Image (cartoon, rainbow, N blue to C red; front, side, top):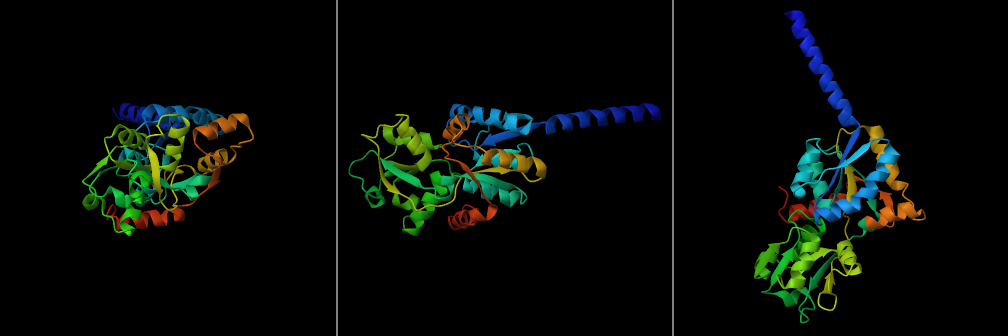
Length: 283
Protein backbone atom coordinates (compact mmCIF):
# COMPACT_ATOMS: atom_id res chain seq x y z
CA UNK A 1 0.00 0.00 0.00
CA UNK A 2 2.86 2.35 0.93
CA UNK A 3 4.59 1.65 -2.38
CA UNK A 4 1.37 2.31 -4.26
CA UNK A 5 0.83 5.60 -2.38
CA UNK A 6 4.37 6.72 -3.08
CA UNK A 7 3.97 5.81 -6.75
CA UNK A 8 0.78 7.87 -7.00
CA UNK A 9 2.45 10.80 -5.23
CA UNK A 10 5.41 10.58 -7.55
CA UNK A 11 3.10 10.52 -10.55
CA UNK A 12 1.25 13.59 -9.32
CA UNK A 13 4.55 15.39 -8.72
CA UNK A 14 5.76 14.53 -12.20
CA UNK A 15 2.47 15.75 -13.70
CA UNK A 16 2.70 19.03 -11.79
CA UNK A 17 6.32 19.43 -12.86
CA UNK A 18 5.35 18.86 -16.46
CA UNK A 19 2.55 21.41 -16.21
CA UNK A 20 4.89 23.95 -14.61
CA UNK A 21 7.50 23.36 -17.28
CA UNK A 22 4.87 23.79 -19.97
CA UNK A 23 3.62 27.01 -18.34
CA UNK A 24 7.21 28.28 -18.17
CA UNK A 25 7.46 27.88 -21.95
CA UNK A 26 4.53 30.25 -22.51
CA UNK A 27 4.68 33.98 -21.94
CA UNK A 28 1.18 35.15 -21.05
CA UNK A 29 0.60 38.72 -22.19
CA UNK A 30 -2.33 41.08 -21.75
CA UNK A 31 -3.29 44.75 -21.97
CA UNK A 32 -5.71 47.13 -20.32
CA UNK A 33 -8.87 47.17 -22.48
CA UNK A 34 -8.68 50.84 -23.39
CA UNK A 35 -9.81 50.08 -26.95
CA UNK A 36 -12.11 47.52 -28.58
CA UNK A 37 -10.94 43.87 -28.08
CA UNK A 38 -10.53 43.33 -31.82
CA UNK A 39 -8.27 46.38 -32.05
CA UNK A 40 -6.12 45.23 -29.13
CA UNK A 41 -5.63 41.83 -30.74
CA UNK A 42 -4.84 43.37 -34.14
CA UNK A 43 -2.19 45.58 -32.56
CA UNK A 44 -0.66 42.69 -30.62
CA UNK A 45 -0.33 39.96 -33.28
CA UNK A 46 2.85 41.22 -35.02
CA UNK A 47 4.39 42.15 -31.67
CA UNK A 48 3.57 38.70 -30.29
CA UNK A 49 5.21 37.00 -33.27
CA UNK A 50 8.29 39.20 -32.85
CA UNK A 51 8.56 38.38 -29.13
CA UNK A 52 8.24 34.65 -29.87
CA UNK A 53 11.13 34.94 -32.30
CA UNK A 54 13.29 36.95 -29.89
CA UNK A 55 12.52 34.92 -26.77
CA UNK A 56 12.34 31.45 -28.30
CA UNK A 57 9.06 30.64 -26.55
CA UNK A 58 5.34 30.74 -27.16
CA UNK A 59 3.68 34.10 -26.51
CA UNK A 60 -0.05 34.01 -25.79
CA UNK A 61 -2.36 37.03 -25.60
CA UNK A 62 -4.86 36.79 -22.74
CA UNK A 63 -7.78 39.23 -23.11
CA UNK A 64 -9.40 40.63 -19.97
CA UNK A 65 -12.81 42.11 -19.27
CA UNK A 66 -11.75 45.34 -17.56
CA UNK A 67 -8.84 47.28 -16.07
CA UNK A 68 -9.15 45.69 -12.63
CA UNK A 69 -8.87 42.23 -14.17
CA UNK A 70 -5.41 43.03 -15.56
CA UNK A 71 -4.20 44.14 -12.14
CA UNK A 72 -5.64 41.08 -10.37
CA UNK A 73 -4.31 38.68 -13.01
CA UNK A 74 -0.80 40.13 -12.78
CA UNK A 75 -0.85 40.15 -8.97
CA UNK A 76 -1.94 36.48 -8.90
CA UNK A 77 0.68 35.39 -11.48
CA UNK A 78 -1.87 34.53 -14.18
CA UNK A 79 -0.32 37.07 -16.56
CA UNK A 80 3.43 37.63 -17.00
CA UNK A 81 3.62 40.82 -19.07
CA UNK A 82 1.04 43.54 -19.58
CA UNK A 83 0.53 46.87 -21.29
CA UNK A 84 -0.58 49.11 -18.44
CA UNK A 85 -1.56 52.71 -17.97
CA UNK A 86 0.21 54.74 -15.31
CA UNK A 87 -2.64 54.32 -12.82
CA UNK A 88 -3.03 50.57 -13.38
CA UNK A 89 0.72 50.21 -12.88
CA UNK A 90 0.43 52.06 -9.55
CA UNK A 91 -2.48 49.81 -8.52
CA UNK A 92 -0.44 46.71 -9.40
CA UNK A 93 2.70 47.98 -7.68
CA UNK A 94 0.77 48.45 -4.44
CA UNK A 95 -0.29 44.79 -4.64
CA UNK A 96 2.98 43.43 -6.03
CA UNK A 97 5.97 45.56 -5.05
CA UNK A 98 8.23 43.43 -7.25
CA UNK A 99 6.28 44.20 -10.44
CA UNK A 100 8.59 46.17 -12.71
CA UNK A 101 7.92 48.49 -15.65
CA UNK A 102 10.40 47.66 -18.39
CA UNK A 103 9.79 50.07 -21.25
CA UNK A 104 7.55 52.86 -22.41
CA UNK A 105 7.14 54.72 -25.69
CA UNK A 106 8.98 58.01 -26.05
CA UNK A 107 5.72 59.97 -25.89
CA UNK A 108 4.74 58.28 -22.62
CA UNK A 109 7.20 60.59 -20.83
CA UNK A 110 5.17 63.58 -21.98
CA UNK A 111 1.67 62.17 -22.42
CA UNK A 112 -1.47 64.29 -22.63
CA UNK A 113 -5.24 63.94 -22.77
CA UNK A 114 -7.54 65.77 -25.18
CA UNK A 115 -10.86 67.36 -24.24
CA UNK A 116 -13.31 67.15 -27.14
CA UNK A 117 -16.79 68.45 -27.99
CA UNK A 118 -19.13 68.64 -30.97
CA UNK A 119 -20.64 71.88 -29.65
CA UNK A 120 -19.03 74.83 -31.54
CA UNK A 121 -19.86 77.11 -28.60
CA UNK A 122 -17.52 75.16 -26.32
CA UNK A 123 -14.12 76.84 -26.21
CA UNK A 124 -13.02 75.85 -22.70
CA UNK A 125 -14.09 73.74 -19.74
CA UNK A 126 -15.86 76.78 -18.30
CA UNK A 127 -18.33 76.61 -21.22
CA UNK A 128 -19.41 73.12 -20.10
CA UNK A 129 -20.96 74.06 -16.77
CA UNK A 130 -24.26 72.23 -16.40
CA UNK A 131 -23.63 70.03 -19.46
CA UNK A 132 -22.91 66.29 -19.76
CA UNK A 133 -19.39 64.89 -19.75
CA UNK A 134 -17.81 61.52 -20.55
CA UNK A 135 -14.66 59.97 -19.10
CA UNK A 136 -13.27 56.63 -20.34
CA UNK A 137 -12.77 53.90 -17.74
CA UNK A 138 -12.70 54.95 -14.09
CA UNK A 139 -9.27 53.24 -13.88
CA UNK A 140 -7.86 54.94 -16.97
CA UNK A 141 -4.90 57.25 -16.38
CA UNK A 142 -5.46 59.36 -19.49
CA UNK A 143 -9.21 58.90 -19.79
CA UNK A 144 -10.12 59.68 -16.20
CA UNK A 145 -7.49 60.05 -13.46
CA UNK A 146 -5.20 62.76 -14.84
CA UNK A 147 -7.93 64.84 -16.54
CA UNK A 148 -9.86 64.75 -13.24
CA UNK A 149 -6.69 65.68 -11.32
CA UNK A 150 -6.10 68.73 -13.51
CA UNK A 151 -9.78 69.72 -13.31
CA UNK A 152 -9.65 69.60 -9.51
CA UNK A 153 -6.51 71.75 -9.54
CA UNK A 154 -8.52 74.30 -11.55
CA UNK A 155 -11.36 74.19 -9.02
CA UNK A 156 -13.69 72.02 -11.12
CA UNK A 157 -15.31 69.10 -9.28
CA UNK A 158 -16.82 67.06 -12.14
CA UNK A 159 -19.80 65.63 -10.23
CA UNK A 160 -20.80 69.14 -9.16
CA UNK A 161 -19.79 71.08 -12.26
CA UNK A 162 -21.43 68.89 -14.94
CA UNK A 163 -25.10 67.93 -15.02
CA UNK A 164 -24.11 64.30 -15.58
CA UNK A 165 -20.81 62.40 -15.57
CA UNK A 166 -20.62 59.08 -17.42
CA UNK A 167 -17.90 56.50 -18.11
CA UNK A 168 -17.72 55.10 -21.64
CA UNK A 169 -15.22 52.36 -20.74
CA UNK A 170 -12.70 53.10 -23.51
CA UNK A 171 -11.12 56.01 -25.38
CA UNK A 172 -12.62 55.19 -28.78
CA UNK A 173 -16.04 54.82 -27.13
CA UNK A 174 -15.71 58.31 -25.62
CA UNK A 175 -15.05 59.81 -29.05
CA UNK A 176 -18.05 57.93 -30.47
CA UNK A 177 -20.29 59.15 -27.64
CA UNK A 178 -19.34 62.78 -28.19
CA UNK A 179 -19.75 62.51 -31.96
CA UNK A 180 -23.18 60.87 -31.54
CA UNK A 181 -24.33 63.48 -29.03
CA UNK A 182 -24.51 61.07 -26.08
CA UNK A 183 -22.30 63.51 -24.16
CA UNK A 184 -21.69 67.22 -24.66
CA UNK A 185 -17.96 66.71 -24.18
CA UNK A 186 -15.44 64.10 -23.14
CA UNK A 187 -11.77 63.37 -22.63
CA UNK A 188 -9.51 60.71 -24.12
CA UNK A 189 -5.82 60.08 -24.56
CA UNK A 190 -3.96 61.99 -27.22
CA UNK A 191 -2.55 58.88 -28.91
CA UNK A 192 -5.96 57.28 -29.52
CA UNK A 193 -7.39 60.63 -30.66
CA UNK A 194 -4.63 60.99 -33.26
CA UNK A 195 -5.18 57.41 -34.43
CA UNK A 196 -8.94 57.87 -34.77
CA UNK A 197 -8.42 61.05 -36.77
CA UNK A 198 -5.83 59.41 -39.05
CA UNK A 199 -8.17 56.46 -39.67
CA UNK A 200 -11.11 58.73 -40.44
CA UNK A 201 -13.10 57.26 -37.56
CA UNK A 202 -14.00 60.65 -36.15
CA UNK A 203 -15.53 63.56 -38.06
CA UNK A 204 -13.22 66.49 -37.33
CA UNK A 205 -15.66 68.85 -39.04
CA UNK A 206 -17.96 68.06 -36.14
CA UNK A 207 -15.83 66.99 -33.18
CA UNK A 208 -13.06 69.35 -32.07
CA UNK A 209 -10.30 69.36 -29.47
CA UNK A 210 -10.85 72.42 -27.28
CA UNK A 211 -8.24 71.80 -24.56
CA UNK A 212 -5.22 69.64 -23.76
CA UNK A 213 -3.94 68.65 -20.31
CA UNK A 214 -0.42 69.32 -19.03
CA UNK A 215 2.01 66.41 -19.58
CA UNK A 216 2.41 63.35 -17.35
CA UNK A 217 3.91 59.83 -17.48
CA UNK A 218 1.57 57.15 -18.75
CA UNK A 219 1.71 53.75 -20.47
CA UNK A 220 4.36 51.06 -19.99
CA UNK A 221 5.03 47.37 -20.48
CA UNK A 222 5.33 45.77 -17.03
CA UNK A 223 6.38 42.30 -15.87
CA UNK A 224 4.91 40.68 -12.78
CA UNK A 225 6.97 40.20 -9.67
CA UNK A 226 8.61 36.79 -9.56
CA UNK A 227 9.13 36.46 -13.30
CA UNK A 228 12.57 35.08 -14.07
CA UNK A 229 15.06 37.97 -14.14
CA UNK A 230 16.79 36.61 -17.22
CA UNK A 231 13.51 36.42 -19.11
CA UNK A 232 12.59 39.95 -18.01
CA UNK A 233 15.93 41.22 -19.33
CA UNK A 234 15.33 39.47 -22.68
CA UNK A 235 11.84 41.00 -22.96
CA UNK A 236 13.21 44.47 -22.27
CA UNK A 237 16.03 43.99 -24.77
CA UNK A 238 13.55 42.83 -27.43
CA UNK A 239 11.49 46.02 -27.06
CA UNK A 240 14.56 48.25 -27.05
CA UNK A 241 15.87 46.52 -30.20
CA UNK A 242 12.83 47.54 -32.26
CA UNK A 243 14.32 49.82 -34.91
CA UNK A 244 12.13 52.16 -36.99
CA UNK A 245 14.70 51.91 -39.79
CA UNK A 246 13.79 48.22 -40.15
CA UNK A 247 10.50 47.96 -42.15
CA UNK A 248 9.27 44.94 -40.19
CA UNK A 249 10.03 46.64 -36.90
CA UNK A 250 8.44 49.88 -38.05
CA UNK A 251 5.19 48.05 -38.79
CA UNK A 252 5.17 46.79 -35.20
CA UNK A 253 6.03 50.21 -33.80
CA UNK A 254 3.35 51.89 -35.90
CA UNK A 255 0.68 49.57 -34.51
CA UNK A 256 1.88 50.46 -31.01
CA UNK A 257 1.79 54.18 -31.94
CA UNK A 258 5.46 54.29 -30.98
CA UNK A 259 8.48 55.93 -32.59
CA UNK A 260 10.59 53.64 -30.40
CA UNK A 261 10.64 52.16 -26.89
CA UNK A 262 12.84 53.47 -24.07
CA UNK A 263 13.60 52.19 -20.57
CA UNK A 264 11.41 53.28 -17.67
CA UNK A 265 11.26 52.73 -13.92
CA UNK A 266 8.71 52.64 -11.12
CA UNK A 267 9.79 56.03 -9.73
CA UNK A 268 8.46 57.73 -12.87
CA UNK A 269 4.91 56.97 -11.72
CA UNK A 270 5.11 58.52 -8.23
CA UNK A 271 3.17 61.57 -9.46
CA UNK A 272 0.41 59.27 -10.77
CA UNK A 273 0.07 57.74 -7.31
CA UNK A 274 -0.06 61.24 -5.79
CA UNK A 275 -2.80 62.26 -8.24
CA UNK A 276 -4.80 59.11 -7.49
CA UNK A 277 -4.62 59.69 -3.75
CA UNK A 278 -5.60 63.35 -4.08
CA UNK A 279 -8.58 62.30 -6.22
CA UNK A 280 -9.64 59.78 -3.57
CA UNK A 281 -9.04 56.78 -5.84
CA UNK A 282 -6.46 55.19 -3.54
CA UNK A 283 -6.76 54.75 0.21
